[in-house]
Image (tube, rainbow over all chains, first blue to last red; front, top):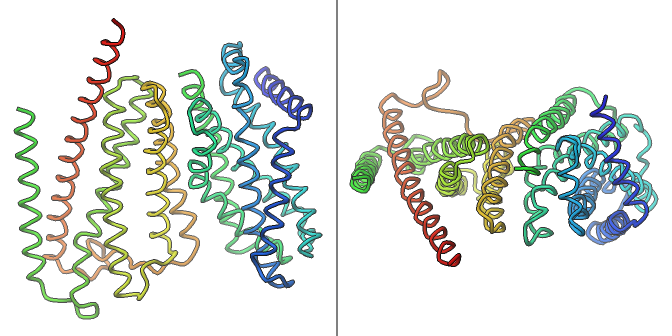
Length: 226
Length: 225
């Protein structure tokens, strides 16, 4: 219980700091909108094409906008040596990491929901047909993006060229999660529920989340403390 | 002494490769594919050697995190670089074969995509090493990335397998395979040669890495006075 409380304290601290400054969330939301705008020029838009490209487009927007958000997660603690203070605080590195991941998760979900609404209006796609299952895929896929993004944000916090290195590192690692999420969203956007062969994609996505959460929680002590 | 053993092993590996090339050149063309099928005698051993390198890199990285000894970090980076070169060889030979048999250089198929993702993952491992100056921090970050990459590869393979594949199935040492026994033996000889070549290259690279570290520490010592 004490562990969960520590995780929530860190998450609440991060969310409060972000909601007061709004620096990462503004940039990320604006970036998501700009990509949605640019994609409208890249494709010949008609209702059928829109539905076909919807899932790939949305998850790329989520991944790009997410990196912008996650990049700040640990870098925000660098001024005034806040990161050293956090590491020195009497909490485990795993609690610190999960707290930060939780805060990022909430922010990223908010950006994604905003993008979905904007996407539905601009591209004239009804994405609410399979609302429950879409939210499930969104929850699992976003956790995969968050956990990878947060651990790499911690890994790259002290290195030069951080902004350049982070995307190069995380996108290849995200390949399985993005593929699963895109495959599942493709059917859901067309109004079909998850069934048949697609169930194995859901299992894969869940497996990715569980494996990487376990490994990162195990390794984060080395990453932050050494 | 160590140098002599290295030279000897290197020379032996090159001799075996030369002998294998001579034997493979003498083989008749395959019924359906003609002479291009012979590329498989290099394509498959290169892949197996690259995978072995990835495994060794993961073990070395775990050992570094547990024991914090720099020699494991040096081994991890050496073996990753060599493995990356072998994987590149595997991708290139596969691409040449695909151009002639499939008519295209590249197809987004399970093994091709996973091999490419694997290559990019380990290339990013080398890139992050260049971005960190401080040796202990570099070793720590690189070890974590190497372990992540090793976990990611099976997941990538599993996930892409859910798509259809057009890459040919295993042909040697399997019940459904059509490879004659003596061809399998040539394959094994070439695998042995590639493994040996990989080991020699890793040892040379390891040597460079150790010398580099010694120079760095001497330089630091010189600056301290």
